[in-house]
Length: 138
Image 1: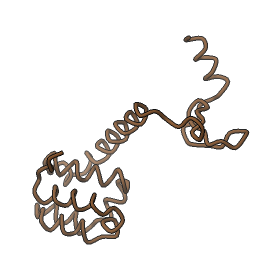
Image 2: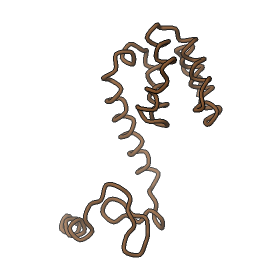
Image 3: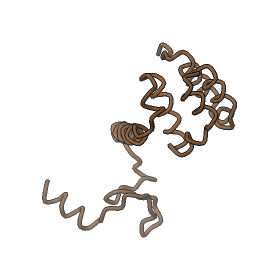
Image 4: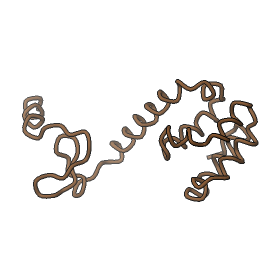
């Protein structure tokens, strides 16, 4: 199989961003047809873990994020997964509250946003975790 994989890689080429193939199908990687085949649950889990690790790496450069407990850090990672790190950095009043260790105010600022209106229960759950520093039971 190694020879086949090498040949397929050469024939298909590697594209790390989605593109339309010669018949107009949305494709990625080494010719993976996303429209007809999609991805497996295991592949989706790998992508999720990779994305979370990347976000944690980006956020680890920020002093106020490093000062949070694990639960509150995860709240910020969750938000960054949805909004991107730059989107989270736009929550200036929340960040000011985090720097002051005023987690109640940070939670309020999270809910006082367009993002909270868009994501509904997710924002309520994350705001609660930010306020208490504890996870909700699963």
